[in-house]
Image (tube, rainbow, N blue to C red):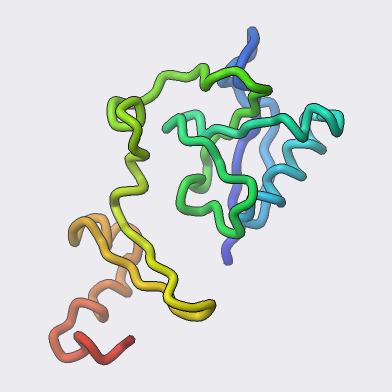
Length: 146
């Protein structure tokens, strides 16, 4: 998996939403929490009660997830909060309870080696896959690649 470059900051206080540092991590919840704990010098008690949010979307990061690249993108600012609600400005879709990135694609894990993806539309698929989507959409290959 490609590594992510994310900025870290605080959710509340006078420096709310401002990056304190930048790290390059593996895209897992455990690696992100370890980086937050180390770089922001959190105590064990603080780290245990910490909530992480993506500043641009207001989405809470699932720290137990093995892959967080669905909610945290390269270059995002991730802020840490200690029980308080998200302090940033939420987009209209996020305020309504849905993550704007989550509905671009739906994932279904069939086994440890196979996941099916249903894309919202061709634009979202092309943005995520780039040139690989041309191969997947080609009529000669449709149904053969799975």
